[in-house]
Length: 363
Image (cartoon, rainbow, N blue to C red; front, top):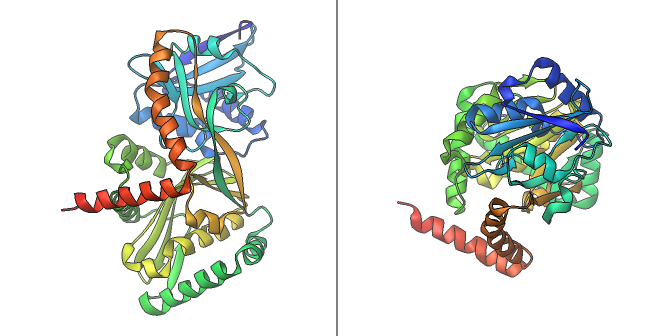
């Protein structure tokens, strides 16, 4: 953006006027209003990731910001989307029509690259640098929950009938079923984190909650209450006992599904599926039109989804040694992952191997 200037700040240095401008620019886009793209999420990340920054873009001599790029800067000058690894929606927040030069923006940020793994589809600044396209699975409840149930009956009638029957059976055998969309009990959040950590280990995957910054981030966001970014803990109870829970973020129009888990003891009742149906019902009642279940294939997502949206993974770079080293480090792993995912039989074998390794690691 040679005709403008860029200031790089810590998130805490943004004034309320600048935050409000960020929100205005975001509202002016046609993309769904993901809470991951709001200043509250970026600020929460900055509290646990000291290298978090935001580039504030200006046009000409204007004192009003024309765009924002939240990011993190590594020790060697490599850049990455803010919250990379946990953020399900990434990119810059720009005035419609603004098209800064990518290499100039990266130079202004003092980074050699900008890595992303859940880039929005309309991020023209970075999409040309994408290496892979992925599907993120969504539930559309814009026309109400009853309409959503009608869609489910049409596309998978057995799934809906079976899940509702399991919900009734859970109530008969474990106590009356009740659902709380926005639970504030810290014990319920602790139970969810425990279930999720156990699930990661059980399936042979990296336990995200073993990383202190992620646990702290969730704690900060659990107390965040903003119109376009509110931490939301939803819990399904049987009697007085929580049997499934989900922690995510919601805006006025989008519920970003983030960390769902359930008590394995109740697995035969499919409490996670019941939970998602009740979340969809409650979200529709709150005027939320879209539940974003995130990227990555899963059987439960196939059963619940009404559609898919594209997100991108890749890395924008500017010429230099640092960018070249980053590319050499990332590309072999990315290509290997893509090779496996594109071959269902190989992906199934890899999944079974991960689970088997996890069983061997258990004491």
